[in-house]
Image 1 (cartoon, rainbow, N blue to C red):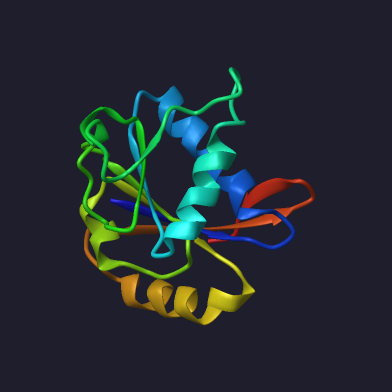
Image 2: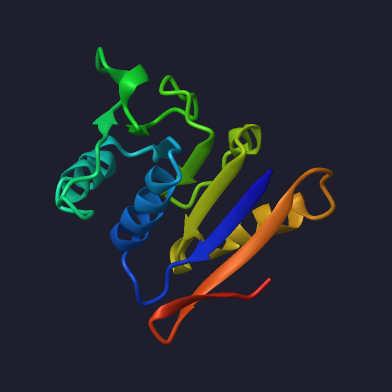
Length: 145
């Protein structure tokens, strides 16, 4: 399994989430986006309506009748009723459940930097876990580790 750490410096979380969401969908994948704050998920819900080639990324907020059919599901829980094999941690709070997915994306900023460093260290040497660290430089993502 792969964990991609994305350091948000000079770029909004919404931009990164939209970009990752588009790439997952292009590969016929499904994505679970997790954050503890329901108000933040509602903000992401609105943002995803105005993204992508058709100005919309198909998604829903968990708790609806169609959760299983959603290509992108926004949730406070790391469980994926949409059978996603990709998880995106949007609020900077590491969740061990991320390791049960094929690929996880962990977004963090200056406020959650210490938690990201701890998660990076805890994953070091874990069998079957590949870590990647990305930083935004010169308008593009650069793999740092």
